Image 1 (spheres, helix red, strand yellow):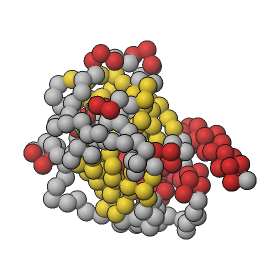
Image 2 (cartoon, protein in one colour):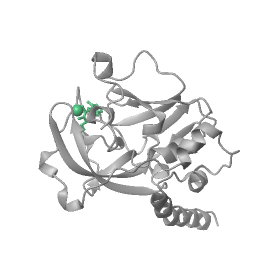
Image 3 (cartoon, protein in one colour):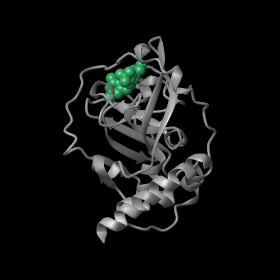
Image 4 (cartoon, helix red, strand yellow):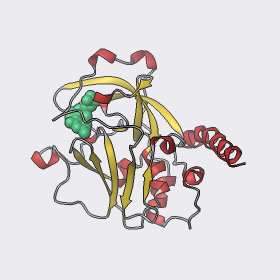
Length: 234
Ligand SMILES: Nc1nc2c(c(=O)[nH]1)N[C@H]1C(S)=C(S)[C@@H](COP(=O)(O)O)O[C@H]1N2
Ligand SMILES: [Mo]
């Protein structure tokens, strides 16, 4: 019985995810089942961001992928993460803080996109990412009305902050695949940010914690705190 209902729920999720993809919006009502709770409707501010489709960035055909142009860029070291005990925490100004296993995250709608990754150090490469939409995770956590920014913590000590609109853009993913393969550890496994709207240094690898906040802290990001631009849009 339990198995049946979770299987059915999964089919609902995957079937409808393509529809919400077409609409360009977030799949909030579809992902509730993953945590098995129902909530009051979201407040107006966050809701309008999650439901009003933002402009989609055109993607590239798969034949344009440049696997050899993609460079690994790690400021310090590659952390070792045990996928079996790994938990992704979503907390901060939310009504429903989350601590999700990989298996739970994999129940969310999955999508791929072929985009150009641009690093300020002077290289760029067309790459395909697969993963879950950050907006679906944000919606699951039921953000409070005053949320405006999102912080990301990584297992190597790297940290980043994004504006909420960019974080819940339908092409901002927490990726677990690169070029059709499981995400390599050096590229951020088990989960990394991937988005066509931000420079490479915004795209945190080895993300362990996502914190929704209403104000930027003094520390804005590893590179930003050394003078790099914070918004870093493409
Ligand atoms: N945790 C973490 N994330 C990170 C970095 C890092 O050093 N640590 N480097 C950033 C930079 S500058 C770039 S260009 C991309 C590079 O991703 P890649 O190593 O998969 O090419 O990751 C970004 N995310
Ligand atoms: Mo970079």
